[in-house]
Image 1 (cartoon, rainbow, N blue to C red):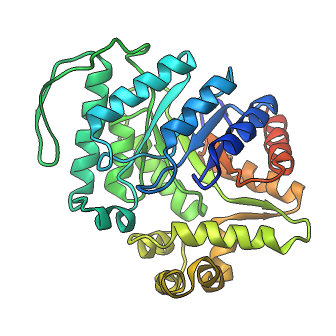
Image 2 (cartoon, rainbow, N blue to C red):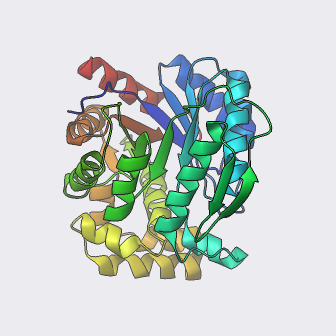
Length: 330
């Protein structure tokens, strides 16, 4: 089990209306959840707008992006946005950042050819701007010429999480940030990724391992299974899908049919193209007790901030799983 205390979260993919997601965040807070995360795509709902709505409606939960990238928002603007969210929420913001989905970024002209360098420069820029430094950076991806935040951020040490998949990015998360953001998978994948991040640590400060999880409670409703297939399929429609599948002991060849299904048949085509072996290894599905047990197992691998997707409807079954996870590990 991870050394750091367990924190539980919920996450949103960005498909819900702002008021619906906000109402669900309030329910999650009332149920004892510790953090709320909101994903964002280049043409999806704005994560910061949603988080600001949540900041006003909640009083305790940590609020974070899961994640935003430095191409649709320059790292300097990201620093200002996170500091503004921290101000509005009374010091409850966290920076959830990553390189983003290349398949969504390249159509809008983003140059994502140097992901590791972009991530390192983004982390450095945000960290230094939040610390009220005058930043000069002549980087390979980003340039700043005496840039400084125009207001004093509430916290100069706001936590930063970096989304990672490959070895170099995992090491960067451990070396330069306060937490890593890893898609849920198998112990075969998550164990080495977490170990690589921890090995790169140069401080004894707590290190968070957050993982967005697609979890469905088996109630006989086929739509729950379809929702899991859609979610994991969208995650695997990106260019790095083959490496993700291989790292989890799955056949890399299972990725291309998912992309083809999405391109030719939309979400229905994507759902039909997701192999059952992917669902079994990269999502959690079962009875309430089975879902709790699977989360306990994930915590034993080193995940200390599991996040369960809320996709609309009644969140009570998922929130009850989180409640019982915390009770079992208390």
